[in-house]
Length: 431
Image (cartoon, rainbow, N blue to C red; front, side, top):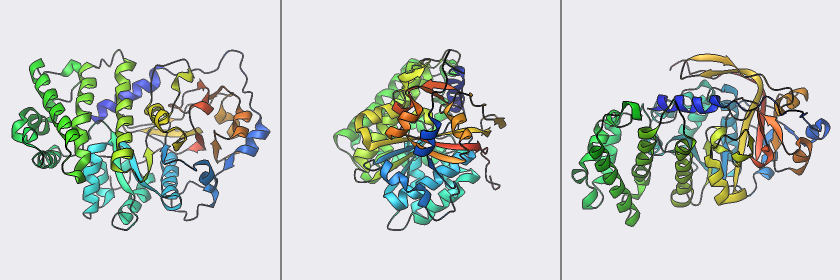
């Protein structure tokens, strides 16, 4: 299931490659002013105990209680290492206490329960968190840190915000947890009263299929949707088992995910259908922020393409509506998106097990400009008037999938973390 969705996302990123250049456009960058306004970051190594080079973020993030940490692709080892260091900085220096991955909200909750019972995050995280993050050698210190802090007075809570489930999570384990959850609820949602849900939990592979492979008849699909809806409504009327509230989201998310799978045509992508995932991820994050962790600040880990906003300012228009737009609309400056990018290097695709070069930067791009400033690691606060003045309104950047996109980027992301040379992701030697 997850591999199918990764393939779909890969197609979205690369079917529309953006622009190599706008006709007649030069960069228009004021390099002297850009050099003055940029923050040079000394290291991305997560083992470095001091955060002096990240001190500028305390001012940039003042007032924010949701911070998105994006990435251009899911094969970027240096980005994962830099993000891991930022997570630790945000937790230790700025009191962010929740880390939400672009992974199943239900299954991440179940592995967090295991961690609280003493399980090693390095051994259980990949049951829910996407493997290119959970098993990366570049996040080893991060998951070790999560385990070390789990039973202290200041844990870094692991959760998810995606609507899809996780393939590696053992279905029978999930089934037992959800049946226990249902059997604590009112009579109409007890497992004996929702047989279609029971079948789904027992044999999920029969249901999570794209339209061309689906063999369930329409009556089966209608019965399942009715039961899933019944459970969701019952919880919303009178919640039960609050310690497992995340399991309620299973009954909200699964119908929407099934709707996408049952209607998608991978030969002809429909943006309206694909946008459902981002809308649901936004709803999950808002639910986490307002219902589950109302007094906590949240770090969100995932892709640049999901975390941006005002995507209609891209040229050419691709009709995608990222979750970051919904969140920005609701929270304004309380939400802060950091997008990562790189000048050159390599990236690794776990989907097809291929190492590939980072697409060369356009000579008119932001990445080329920062490279010309001899910047190894750097940060641009896109809310800073000096940065906006130095860059101009519209310019080329490779924030989405390392393609040369023209956009009004100062209105599409709050900050840009630059890495000159990207190291490709690698899995840990024990994986």
